Image (cartoon, rainbow, N blue to C red; front, top):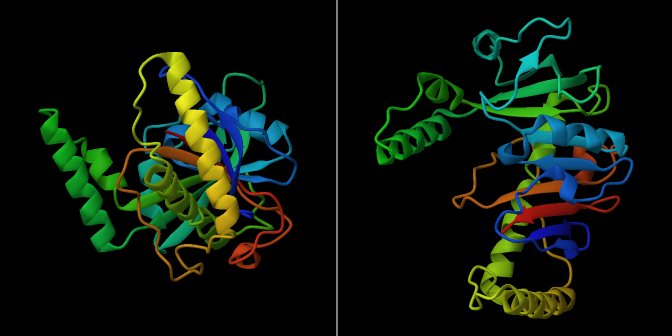
Length: 270
């Protein structure tokens, strides 16, 4: 189930139901000029990024160290770990290019880098080591090094959104965590009682109708966690994936905290 969720109104406004082979990607939603699309690392796919820009929107996508083949603006290979080692401040950015294999001209992007706290980095490294042990493997040393950083790839203009604002915008992703926890707990959409496709589809839609009515009656939901540079975002504990199209790029991140100037869409693969 792929859901478009408007954070400004707290309502789902796009729903696409597929079978188990219907993978998540940014092209499942529609975007308007000026929207900002937030997405976690599972959406960092080269051919999915350009259509967002072609629609007149922007994106902020979290990426893993080995997810994309980036280049320097002049076309030479980009050394991510050299860039990480060269960063002395907690937050910074570098200009990069991405060849998506579709157009002759590569995408000109910004890689925003934030160094995690020691506690955050150690927690992420423990998770990587634990997951590797379950598979009988040893974690890649580069994964352990990258665990110290948050990497965000964005098409937003630096003149309007500096690195600090890009990181602040990405924290809005936490609002959809709460939204889908409500969807699972209130509507029971984390379990499927019917096995036949037709019955399963009818069951899901019936549950969704009840959930949407409840959400409309509940009204506006609050922002979470509190916005601001001091707030540190954490990774969700569950593996579900999501993306957000967030407010107009005419307003800075500070103006978006607590209010939204236009439609905010969230996509989630459940």
